[in-house]
Each structure stands twice: as C-alpha cells, then as structure tokens.
Amino acid sequence: MSSITLVSETQAPAPTPDLLREANHRISNHLALLTAMVRSQISGIDKGPELLSRTEAKEMLVAATGKLVSVSRLHHRLSEQSHVESIYLSEYLVDLCASLVSSLDLSERVYFVHKWKADCRLSPEQAQYLGLLINEVMINALKHAHPTGLPVQLEICCERHTDGRVTIVIGDDGVGLPEVNIGPGGVGLKLIRTLAKSLDAELRVESDSLGLTMILTLPASVDAVKCLSVVGS
Image (cartoon, rainbow, N blue to C red):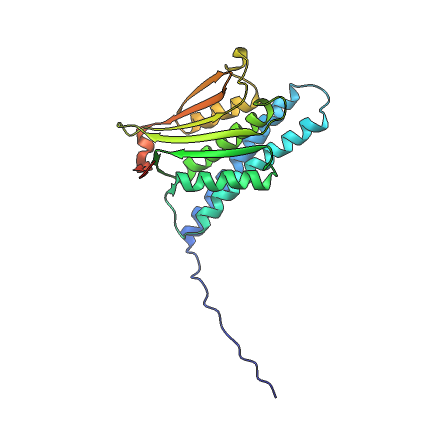
C-alpha cells in the first residue's frame, strides 16, 4: 500500500489590521484619482466632435488602460514588502515603462531611454502621480510626436540639485507642438499639468522641431526623497 505524506507549507504572517487599513486606504485613494482622470477625459469628449473614429476610440482605451497599468505596477511593488514608506524612483519608472510597452502592445511604436544622474526615494503617493504623468506623456507622444507613424523615442532623465530639488526631464524625438498648443493644451496636457500640481512641482514645457520636452522640478521637501548619486552615470 502506498503512503501519502502531507507536507505543510510555511505560511506568511498575516498582515496586521493597521497594514490592511493602510493598504485599503491607498487603494481607495488611487481608484478615486483614476475616476477623476477618466471623468476629465469624458468632459473632453463632450466638447469634441459628435462621432469618434475607430482610431480615436482605440486611443482613448489605450490611455485608460495605461492609467490602470501605472497604478497596478505601483501596487505590485508595494505588495513586495509588508510596509513601504518610500520606493526608489528609478526602479519604479523602469518597471513601469517596460510594463506599459508590454501591456499595451507598443513594442513597435515606442521605446524608452533612461538616464539617471541621481536616484531618489519617493512616497507611494508621489510615485502614483509621477507614474500617471509618465503615462500621459507617453500617450501624448504617441498621438503627436510622429504624424507619419514612426516609432517614438522617449528619454527620461533625472538629476538632483545642490539645494535638494529634483528635476525629471521627459522628452520625445518628434516634431514638437505648434506654438499655439504649448499653453493650456488639450486634455492630455491639462492632465499632465494637474498631476504636476498635485506633486507641488514646477512644470516647464518646451517644444521645437526636435521634439517636445516636459521638465518637472520637485521641491526640496520631496527630498524625503533621500536622493542618492548614481555612481558611474
């Protein structure tokens, strides 16, 4: 007669009520932010043409999916540790950009180049706004950077100033925007400006024939950010 050996698996300790409460609070806040952003896009649609083309409808769904991917990757990173007060900016953004390209099937349409002169630790709340902002910049670049349909290169640079401020530069290699559009802009640029404001960050938009660049400067207080110089950069 064969015998069956039961092997008990070691179970991870159950999360404490405080950790569960914190996780639920974060999820609630992130979902509320996503809802507000989608409502903003709906408002933009109401002001647009009566009928949307298949391409325009697909672009809207890709933008919405990108927002979900952004928040999902953040929660995945937070779930890897029992309690997280801050996360590394470089690790999160590299992971996020790769996930956006993979999840949205954009490998032939966009690619990212990362250049880090400094690394920082951001709070999960700051990371969520920055991740959503990166997604909006990417969607904007896909729409406008190359009207002929060429793949878009997005370069993300990060540097730390001596006064503790952190500047993140996100630029594409496209044709830039007409000067008239550098102001308030369409729904995409308005969302980017709103997200930057939520970070209490200064946003500068530069555009020329070599592309569109977003220069985001986070205040020194965000240097709870504990910036670390990157060796060899």
